[in-house]
Image (cartoon, rainbow, N blue to C red):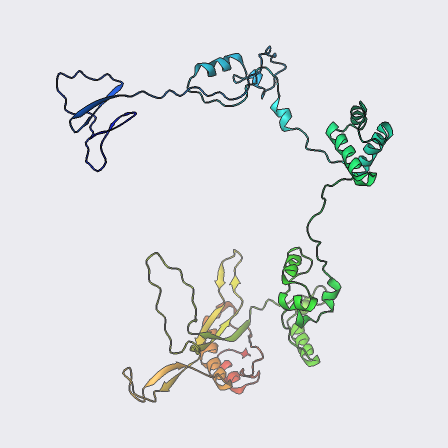
Length: 434
């Protein structure tokens, strides 16, 4: 059995079918016309006529009566009357094109300027006082009757230069409210919740230790944290980083003042006090450095493995102290550096005998390890053994016979100014003062 539909034959359900656009047919069968299709289904042949769907030109909208085309002076650059879209030639071209899907209203010779329409003023809002004046004029000319008399609407609209719909709506509002107070401007000026005020005087009264964070300040002022965040963004108050300053006793202030006076040029005291150049002052200082960091940022290429770092205890990473010495660098008249001022950097290390045997060394073998504590004896040893010889070797020849000063900070481990060991070692080749 073969099913049949409106378009031709269909194969029965559940049976295989074979459909071919060019099936083998006998020579007695005439060739099909170009607009037909031969379908063969299990020995049956059917000729189905195929027609191409014709899409009519869709035209939706109203067509206004034709008017005389305005001159070039009357039509603007955006006027449809001066373009092919609004001319008779453009209309004829659209009508002659059957595949055109033009949808809209055809404006022929209307002379509408879209530049004027785009720059049209927005809707005007009338204040309550203006509306009261319009309503009073209506009452004066119309009376208190509910129905507005003929000609009152047009006259009031003309006198107050207001649209007729506005005058009509105002009269309706007055009739519903039965009073002039019902006529008012309902436009919302400021909406939303009121801004929470910020009291700067109350903030000053709070102790500084209670306003270190926004949470503590919000709790002390009894406001929300988000409110303070908005006020901080509006710069009603500011954030300040407070540093601890050293507490000076009168003796400390006197010593610092004397030190500043000693570093002034004697010849400049009468005119303009100027500090000395300081080319003969060596500054030394110590600094602790950890062997590595617990977390280290590193940039890697795609596919590269991160470096492997390990330590015995992440909470107690090994550290070492370094001693550095440097002076002010020197330049010639052309700006070339003649002396960079780098004297040297030395680590505080010591040789220690191993207490136990391991796979790396035997018991009693000497190992180089960082000093856990640095005392005055270690500072004297490094000053005599490393700092002074380096100064003598690297100091410029042109200034070798001048007095050189070694400046230290007030650490307790530093040697005194009259230390005999340092004075003797510094005075061996050249007169040094520390």
